[in-house]
Image 1: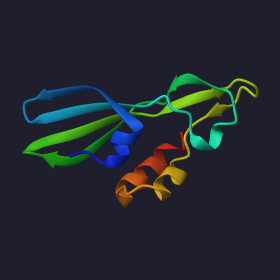
Image 2: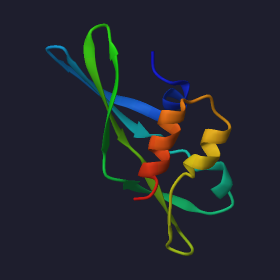
Image 3: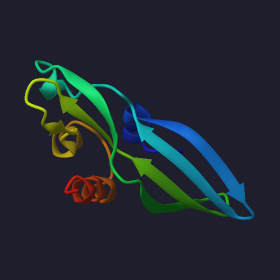
Length: 107
């Protein structure tokens, strides 16, 4: 029902249904990006939530609420986030989802 990519990198934390409108809330898992494994990273909250209208499901309008995680490099005090361009190369996500993730990574 949901893209494999979303299931692999995000947790469904809440869902609500009001009439024929369904809201699914996702938070990125606290798993340090592979390319940053050599650094000491501390979870440092989330980017602003982004809402995406997804394909209808069984006659319901579906909205995905996505919160991307960020980490703080303990040594340099730089903020680090997952490079979604690298993830997109190794997944089977739709071009639309890859484009969306590329857009939100510019925050």
